[in-house]
Length: 418
Image (cartoon, rainbow, N blue to C red; front, side, top):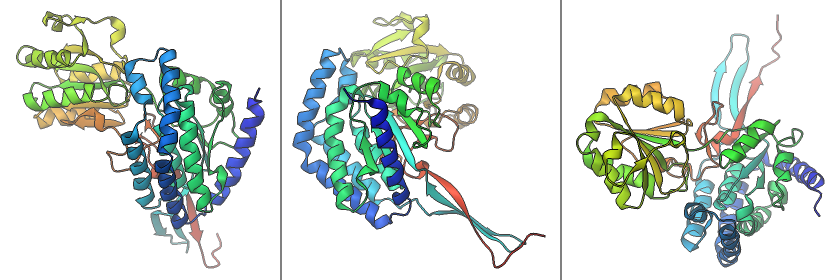
């Protein structure tokens, strides 16, 4: 049986040594590693799909929902998207060394604030094996070594993807330990990573409430929080009917298992009394179970909402629906039940939109756009390591630039302090 503590210590030390070299790796070498990784992933697509079939069987045996199995599943199109993401990250401007600010002081000092890698990043994630490629690519682009601990459901898929990534890294002359995958399903590895203060600089959790709760309770390493996607859409009295139908259906049904999927619909009383029932019916026609408040229960086919439906991340073909008197009531509901991930307002009244944007502090706020756009790739970041919902410097989609810190470069010419 694997000695988890000893194995993680070895992985951590190797990552720390790799990070020291990656901190000054050239942009060209990192680019070559990512392009090579993309080519190796594509060349290995047959092996990856074969490995994924084992994970899908494992997921079915565990009783995963259809939405969770969809998150887990890889086919050639999804592998192509993974490859495109690797290439997109490769082509981005290298963030390391970018000058954020520069100024002169009367004391003769010239000061620059420049981006620098964080060091070693631990990424703990569930279900979605594509995170292996996304996280590996972004950490490498930002000059960081990464320790990946994927979910037990995606163990075989992540292992096959990781193998391809490492080939690209080594072919470019970078340390093999640049991207490491914890080689066990044992959950003790998660707890161990959370206390590796000597070798891991930051932890990024990407998963459900259980994982995030564990991280919050046990982490001694700094954490970029990625909480649940309890995503709300508020339909204002001024909302456009067709835009709302299109956006709500897409936000809920395009992919129900992702963190940007809508989980709660807040509807202005005026809309509920006019064309709002069409929105509810359209959702039900698509197979969505609608947990409705007292007012909306008048719509045939809905079911009564229970208290625990508010603030619930369904990750399935189910949504909670509630009427509100105005934008302020919608804001109050979101403040009480939201997770500061992504929230949307459907409105044509600019004042309502401004109020919604001003008074909510979610990492992502949207207007007349599907919440399924809450994604680093859609934001032009190539990929994302997750959606950070905390208040640290990395917030919203976490791309390569967010995986850096900064340092001050101070130059003088014999300057001394009086």
